[in-house]
Image (tube, rainbow, N blue to C red; front, top):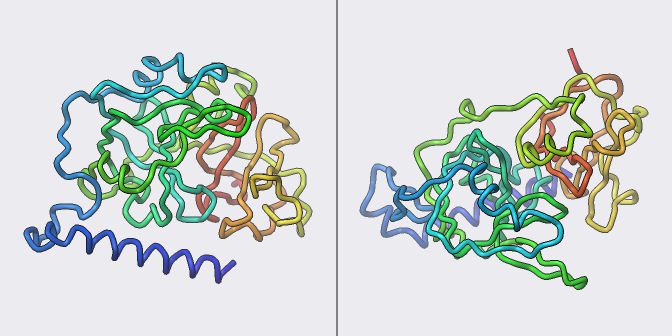
Length: 285
C-alpha cells in the first residue's frame, strides 16, 4: 500500500507541474501568486444558484427512469470541496457542498487533491455540462451510456473541467461542516434524497465483520467495482464502501464502537460511506 501511495504522490506532483507549466504566462505576469494556475480565471459570478435549487430545477433528470440532462442555462454554483481523491477511495470525482446540499462532480483526472483540497471554494459554470444520477446519486459531468443503455453523468475530460471552474481564495477546511447522520432516519427516503453526497459522520456504530484480522477491502472480497462493502450495525441500508486501491484498504477494521466520517453517497436505496483517508474513522469516545 505504501508503494501505491508513493506512486500516487509522484503522479500528482507531475500533474501539478505540467498544469502549472501550461499556465506559465499567468505565473510570469503574476509573481505574487494571486492568480491561480488552475481553472478559468475569467469566470465571473453572474447567475449563482444553490445546489438545492439546481436539484429542484432538474428534478426530472434525477430519477432512475430518465436520461441525463444537458444544462443549457448559463448558471453557476459556488461550493466548497468536501471530498477528493487524497486517500484513493474517491476516484475521478470531487464532492462539493454549499450548505443547501451536496453533489459529486466527475472529472477524468488524478491528483485532484493537489489543487482541490478539502475546504477549497470554487465557482463552477454549469452551462453545457450534464446532470443526472448514477444509482440515484446526483452527479455532474458528461454523459456515458452503459451497455445496458442507461445514461449517467461520467468523467469530463480535464481540459473541459479547467474551462468550467474558478478557484476562489485559499482553502479553508474550517469552513466545511460535517453533519451528524441521524440513524433514526436510516430508512427515510426523503432524508436520503436531501443528504446524499454530503460530508457526514455516524457515531457509536459497529462493523459486525470486524474480528481483529479482517481488513476494509481485501482484493479477494472485491465486487466488480473493485470495492468492498462492510455492513454498519448489521444494516442492509448502510455500508462502508472501500476501494481496493484505497491507501487504507489493507487496514484492519476496528472492533467495538467507532465513529466514521465520509461522503455519504447512495446506490439506489443503500447509503454508502466513502471515507476519504484513514483518519476518517476512530474508536468512539
